[in-house]
Length: 120
Image (cartoon, rainbow, N blue to C red; front, side, top):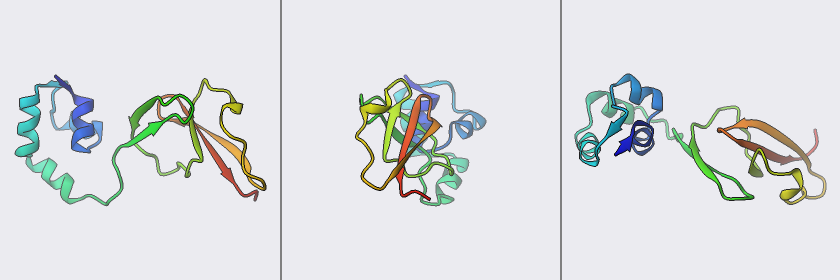
């Protein structure tokens, strides 16, 4: 069985859109294949309106390798490293000479983004 979340990931649509348009909480592989091969009008329109930006991104911890799919946020900077929130600060390499480091909380369900950048 394919969950609604997995279907949204595979179709590259927001989970809210999947829910709003009646994709059930679980689909059989055959039902999902039918949805992909014969997309309803709303899915065709969604695909036609694509801006080229990803709907989902894969977040992966640079320390332990844990990963999850998440909806990217416009406010996310370019991360130098991405770690699970339980990892220690010293588990990633030090910033390069002349760069300052800052942490960005609230990335996905459990990540902290680490950004190395020139001081302001």
